[in-house]
Structures are given as structure tokens and as C-alpha cells.
Image 1 (tube, rainbow, N blue to C red):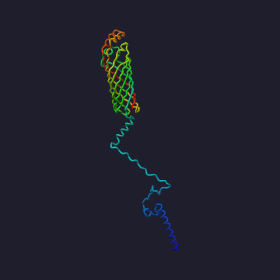
Image 2: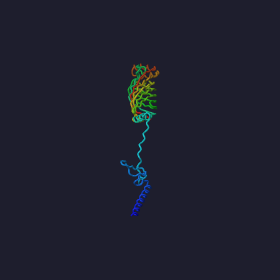
Image 3: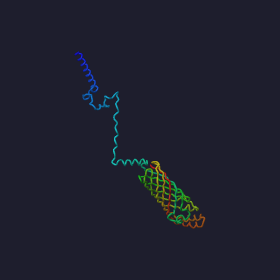
Image 4: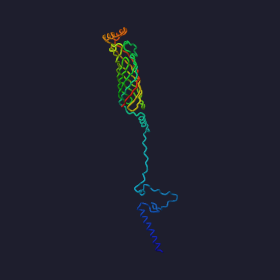
Length: 293
């Protein structure tokens, strides 16, 4: 009986030792014990220890749980709170316009011209052989460069009227105020002006009379940018015209007298022997289409 009990006790001790050895090889505490060698029994009321999911011993079949998510780091805040950056972005979104260097445009519309606005002595300039006021159409074109708010360029215009045409060509300087897609502007211009293609009841007068001089122009308008490179708009301008007419030779005056149909016209022909001058004006309203690069 005693020998049987001793044999049973030896068998139990051998089994416990084998289990402890196997647990040590797998990195796990022996059954009934904690990693520190204490009893596996938890104190009353204490939560059981949670296994570490990233422990290599918890991986099965080469699979492991995903790593914990990391929140993105906040962007650094500039000293002004990013106000300047937001303003720049708003400007780009509102207008879509880039830096403009070269521009060109064409225009067309209506023009009223008075050759003697500030000098009502009609005999001095044309002696009544050519009308001194007219209404008609006008075409023009301009090209130049732009630096931020300022433009510098050249412009030419032709006004088409029943008795003559008004030609002008010169330079201009302008100032612009970009407001998103809108671009209000004002310009000052100066250059050469002259009349041509005269039509008169007396052909000799039409061929002999020449009127030329200078203009000073102030204009303003509003452009709408439909894209960064294309705009449409409206423009209004007023010109001061300083014009002169060279005196005619005796031969030219005799020719005019010979073709004049009435005695008053023959008498007025002598007035063309002296040089004439006048100060006039022109008002134009035009539609404008432009390209910007």
C-alpha cells in the first residue's frame, strides 16, 4: 500500500515537471503561476490581465494585427495666422489672372467730331468748302506693356465720316485697378491727328486743302476678363484737337474759283490763301476686345 502511494506521488511530480519545462520553452508561465512566479489566482475584484496583441507569441500563421493609427501632425501656424496666404489664395480664385506683361486690343464704336469746338470762325479753317463737324463710326487698335497697375503703349484710330476721315496715332499711359475679373482703368494719350479723304462739292478744294495737327486724349473704361488672356469691355474718350491748315497757292485758289458753282464760293476761295488754325474736340464711345500675355 505504501509503495503504491509513493509511486502515484512520483508520477504526479514527474508530470508537473514536464509541464513546467514545456511552458518555459514557449515563453509562457506554467499553469497556475503568473509571470513573476506568483499564484495565477487574481485578487478578488481585480480585472484579469489583458494579453498584448503585438506579442510575437500571439501571432498565428504569420499574421499580425495592424499597427495603431497615427494622427497627422497639425500644420505650423504663421505669426499672422495665415491671413496673407488666404488673401493671396482668394485673389487667385476670384480672378484666375496671372501676371500680365504684354497686351493688345481692338475697338469700334461711335465718334462725334467738331473741328472748331473752341474756335467758331469756320472761314479761317475750311472757308466753308468742307464741313467742320461730323458724326460717324470709329475703329482703333492698341498694343503695349503692363507693369502691375500701369500700362504703356501706342494706339491708332480712324474715324469714318461723310466728308472726310480723321486719323490719329500716338502713345498712351494708363493706370488700372484690378478687382477680381473686373479691371477699371484710365488713360492719357498724345499724338498726331490729321484729316484725309476729303469730299467736297468743289473737287479742287478737296484736293488742295490739308488739315493736320495734334491731339491730347483722356479716356476711361471697364474691362471684364472672361479668361486670363481674353477680355471684353467698354471705353469712353475725349480728345482735344489742335489743327492747322497750310495756306494755298495762287494756282490752287484759281482752280477752286474755276470749279466753284456760285459767286460766294469764288469769293471765299481767297480766304484759303492764308494759313488757318482751330481747336476742336472729339468724343468717342467704343466696345473693346483685348488679349493679355
